[in-house]
Length: 233
Image (tube, rainbow, N blue to C red; front, side):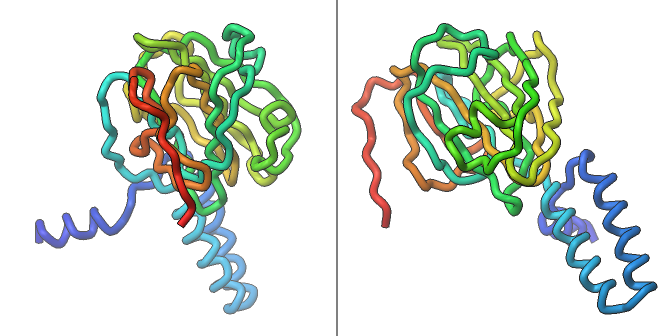
């Protein structure tokens, strides 16, 4: 019996508590649709399963070596560039390396801290809901910006709402200490995260690479080896 329960636990991924209200709404809608016309009930069932899948919160194995910057989100690395961080981060107005991870509606949307450190700044900025893949979404879209101070540098993390996303949820406050890979927020239904690291940090991912929140190493703040090159295969 114990083996069966353990197998079920491994198959069924945990669901974040933020998803429970949406799952209940989907279940209620499914019951109503099935009562009206049974084929509609199947559509509602598929929708309910998708809502459960969207709010999944699987455990992650996080590398904890000092200096590593891990991905705060599941998704695709769609931009690596040099940019001045947003003014609301209150970081020096000097260029930093910006790594953007785009999340589609099928990615896990629980966000995890890219580094271990103390939160020194949080600022929510209202804005538009443009396609989060667009570069200008960093400045025009609704977003929530955090600064995490580590032993080596201050890291900027910006949660950006997307075309479908309409709600950014934060679990933390200024002064909180985070461990690498610790959950700090969630964005509902498609969005993007921008990570700002110092220019001397070694970027360890390539464009188009799939990132896993809390596991994929994006950069190294302490590396002294040559920059890596990538190819699309």
